[in-house]
Length: 71
Image (tube, rainbow, N blue to C red; front, side, top):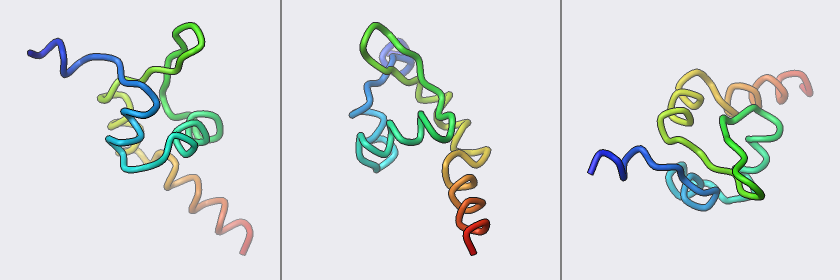
C-alpha cells in the first residue's frame, strides 16, 4: 500500500490535492518553481516534494511579494 502513496501524480491529481485548477498548477510550475518532473509530454509530481514547496512559501509567498511591489 505504501507504493501507491508514493506514486507520481498527474497535473489534474495534484491540482485536486491542492484545490486549484490545472491552469494554476502549470502557472505555479512555470513561474514559481513548483517541483515537477517531465515524463515525455507529461508533467508529474511527487506529493512530498509539493508539500515541502508549499510549506516553504511556494506560490503564495511569491505572489504576495509581487503584489507588494505593485503597490
